[in-house]
Length: 132
Image 1 (spheres, rainbow, N blue to C red):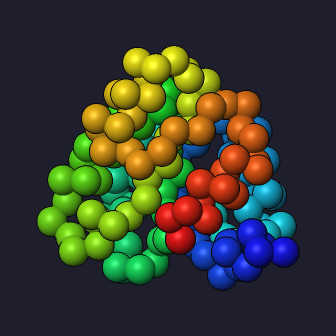
Image 2: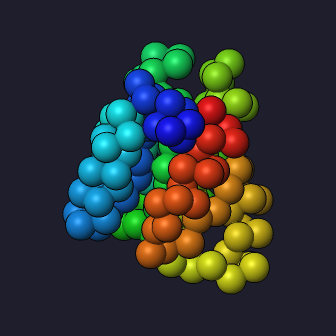
């Protein structure tokens, strides 16, 4: 199907501190032919993105509630990096907090979209298809 084509060969960076959620996300993306690298908090996401080659990741999936550095701060740090690829990098929030205020905070911190938890994988595919 079309969605599998969209994700096939894509590589994602995902910041997710919950081991179970990280595993589910990995399984779902891999079933669609994508690969995902999981980091456990926002600080690690910033550090990993700083080290990546332009084009290495197709999008960043960002949990909002994480230890060390939350998703909002992590996104702000990533968006502030002096890199040519950062403006076009899709950063998708994944959060149990789905109130209008939370979604507004996501957008203000530089995230492109917000996906409510528990994750509806159909929604994830739909959003990724829009950006990839």
